Length: 360
Image 1 (cartoon, rainbow, N blue to C red):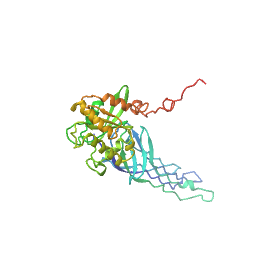
Image 2: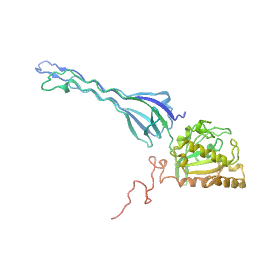
Image 3: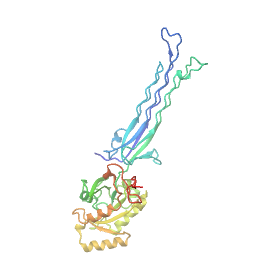
Image 4: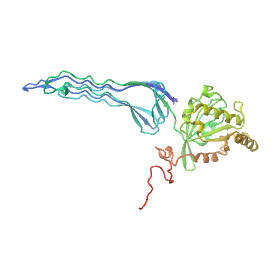
């Protein structure tokens, strides 16, 4: 399945049906009168977040969505049929943006979340509704409210509890393959990963989602390399894991320089990424000895890292300690564990939404 995280679509609600102009004419009925019914309501445009979708690729082939209009009013005081709403299904994590991308109209973070983006027009009044004691045979009616229309952007931000960042060839794909059920492509060249990947990590009876995004290089905020477009997929993460190549086989940076490059790119992107907790890990420990790992770890601590983990995504060495640190940033129950909404712990140590039982 192709991954697409941005799409522009046109939506239009249904217009209201026009009211009818009709008069009752039946044999043996001495007095007739106006009996034109009202028009039906037009269809709403509804967006709904559903499970099982993780891309916006469907919106590449279908960009126009138009709800049906309401039915015409008819004689014998028959009201036109109201149109069914048009429901557009989107992945969880999708944001609805205005055409100029300045305003966030909606943000879908839970399965089943729905919003009515555009309301259908009301049906017009038929001539029967205009009948009064002085206006016994009205011929006026309403045409029904017009449809509403707009262009919107859909932007998908994958929901993950932790995210992997680092330079190209830092070993992020190998790491996520080691700790999760993902089968990300691994290659000895820059930008092997071209689109974000998600994996479910199971560690010490806990489950959480880990996101791997394409590598960043210096100047990514200005469009260098793949750019910083995919950083939006880790905006919702609770903690970031910064993998650094201990072997120095990356694009010419030693570990301290690699740390600084990523820090600067996260700060340039903004959106709160520079303030997120980060776990720094020296990766590819299988390609270096312990003495070199200790020396680089000390260099990274002097560069600003609070704690440095030494791991090997290929062999799994040191990964358990790193995952233990990740668990400290998770909620009481992640959305993966509850199959729905994650739960936080309240101040009394219980889970949010629970009532502490008391016999009094």
